[in-house]
Image (cartoon, rainbow, N blue to C red; front, side, top):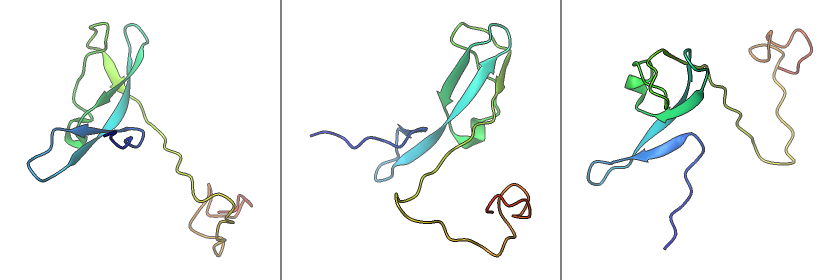
Length: 95
């Protein structure tokens, strides 16, 4: 029986009996060699030091962005022009 694919950026951690636990994927860059790599770890460990695949300890967590898509063909609801977009909607961004 085939297992369902997991959403991008989420991997299954060993669950407690009767419970499924998911851990996010974080992106890091090594300052020594410049490699960019990903680690699956609990949120509580996201800022903890880590070692790059080449063995260097000088790494930094990168700020990741996530794009979430909606239903195809649907027009997004327009708000009152406040509370969204890059400036609350006043620049005409559609926020």
